[in-house]
Image (cartoon, rainbow, N blue to C red; front, side, top):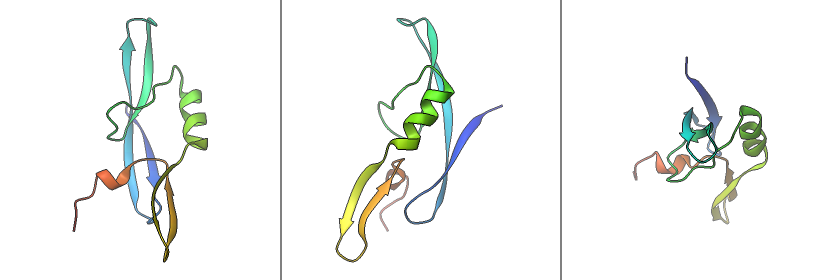
Length: 83
């Protein structure tokens, strides 16, 4: 069964991101990461560390005088095409 995060972005849209794992040879254990389009996403030894990180992390990605500062956790703007 797959585990995913459902994220509501600053525009009010919902996105689904899979939580994936990879085996790290140096540590000898599986590391978890969120497959959100980042080239090198942060990796975590346990689900608790992943949740804690994304509870406090945010990305400041755009500012306008009309709307102010947009703050998001995941880079959803890479998922949409320029319209």
